[in-house]
Length: 432
Image (cartoon, rainbow, N blue to C red; front, side):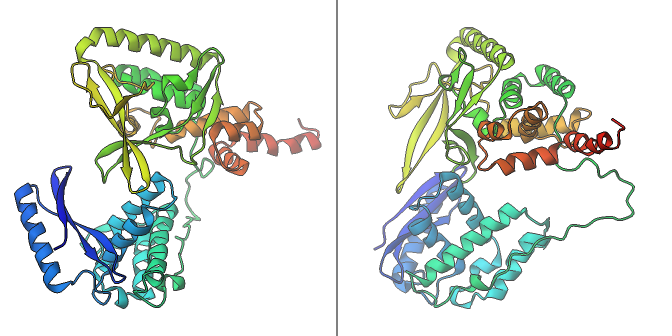
């Protein structure tokens, strides 16, 4: 009899059990149950009985694309060398694919035409099978879906030998054509993500000091040090050297929707970098540290402390974030961590709440329409380069993989440098 178990994720229970695949290996299958543990246990018993009677899941002739994706995720994706962030991206793509009818097709009947139609729908948007009309996804998202399908079909060919060829080899990823209105009177001079002026930055800080004080420090750090939203939230006081004025970027914080957990992981490129800063940010950080110590005294037993817990999933390790009041008993496997960006009660200010704050002020604060947190990083880049910083130095401060990435951000972020370059010809003509 197959072995099975149930577990709770969010409000729902899920049931899972092991089955044999076509190669005789045991693979785990998980299905959505209900909000009732007993009902989910009943579904588990029925599913295991059905499997024992028919062996329907494991037969190569019956396996669906959705089932292949689950097997590939368990046997190859989760035990591979990809970063935790990439793995979570791919698992998210799998969940999306499984909502589409193409995932219910028997593997041997899936053709390149089916896959091309599916990827075209993701690229260009349109009416989905559930009747909803959706816009096309970004290029990065499309590449994630393509990578998942490409690798899982390759896995099905070998080593699984479930099919004899990979239909993804015939797929062409298409691009959305850029539409230009030749007769529009709209000024196209300001394209791309624009930096914010220092006056606007001060306006932003003044607004947040009244409306959402917890968001002030993360935004100040991003403005003066160029950190990404997850990197700002992952910063600890041990990462900061106030005497020599530099900080070390080691980790990033993100929310995992599948696990319903805030996860502490590596940075985007899994690299540790050093970011120097000046006297302005030094003063901001010293003031913030004093304020946090004051809050800790005022809140007393109600003050929260922050912890991480190491979790192993196959050969992969990740860290879950937890906050607990001073009065709560701390589990033995919890490790305390001293984050920089805190709410007044001591809890971590997370990327999720920061993103909500940015969307809210984009709607309510005049002049900040379309504002997002990453705009602060673009502003940092623009401010350094426009004031004479060496591009290679800026690249290393930002953690970009290539200096061309840094320069492309700057080229899209501001027109002032291009104006200055263009006016050099005035000097040639003697009109400077």
